[in-house]
Image (tube, rainbow over all chains, first blue to last red; front, side, top):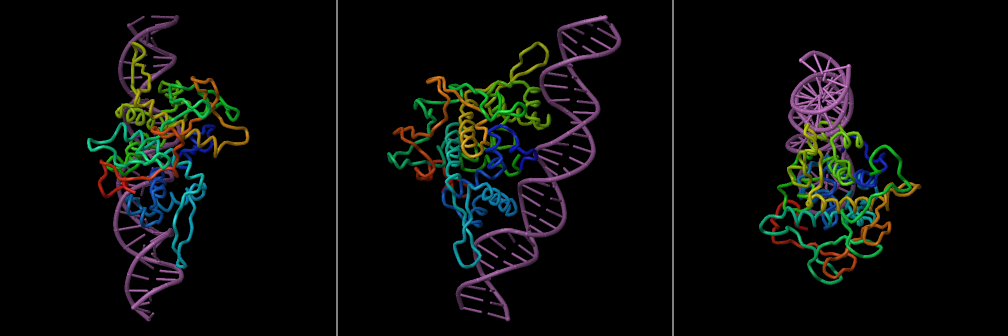
Length: 156
Length: 156
DNA sequence: CCTCGGGGTTCCCTCAGGGAACTCGGCCTG
DNA sequence: CAGGCCGAGTTCCCTGAGGGAACCCCGAGG
């Protein structure tokens, strides 16, 4: 956990980090996404300490990105993505895209994504939701919005 | 910093986190993006400890996402995005989009993005780079790729 | 009644983050 | 040319989060 509380900042990036910014959180979310939904599975897959995994899962549940549900009459639980969480996975796909492009080893990307709609192995591409043309860092101006307050990140 | 070294994992998400996964790193990158390019500016804007800011900037420079360049004959430096870094900012835009949607307060989003191409205030939208239709968490199958090795995250 | 196995909880140790003070190296001013 | 300033770090101490391993709880099954 970041000692500093990011959630107080008037910045949507900081607020998102407040949910998945802690170490391991994105990887935990990734595991839940790909179907590793039980505590033991995630713990074994990531090699994360059980204590930290408990904290991260609770945090994700509190923020409503993951839901904890029993799957047995014994005290057994599995974790599943909520729709809020599924939208966070978009972030993971963009991360994966950057990692594939800039940090893959000679062998190639460790993971591929097949798009249901076209059946192709493909990658995400960022587009403007207005005009549909590409939208990247250099294609935008950053402006203060209605929820801005001066002090703390949020205003350029 | 995560104590565990994510860079060894066969997972592009983990590898990306190895670059910007530490606390503060995304916010530092954000500041550089919006034009807060000097040490003192970033430090004042974020309220981050000088020690940690030094570490984060060095880390970003080592990974080639940010470049440190002198801007005076005195020992003064500014940090600017490289093209590798600019592509990482895509990630920040997606983060901002999620934060705007799920965590904005009543006032509305703290920051707006105007797309140069169309001049509109808009948001990023994820599309398949093959067929151009929407590509989200639930629209893909995750498959092992050529760089996969069993053990550690990377294989579903 | 004992064991098993999932899902945590507890405890201790180390090391990273916060915060404030200190340093260094050139210009600038008197 | 002594002193001050200002940006850009560096150093130091203190606290608290992550790692790791052991322990616990609970219901099912033999």
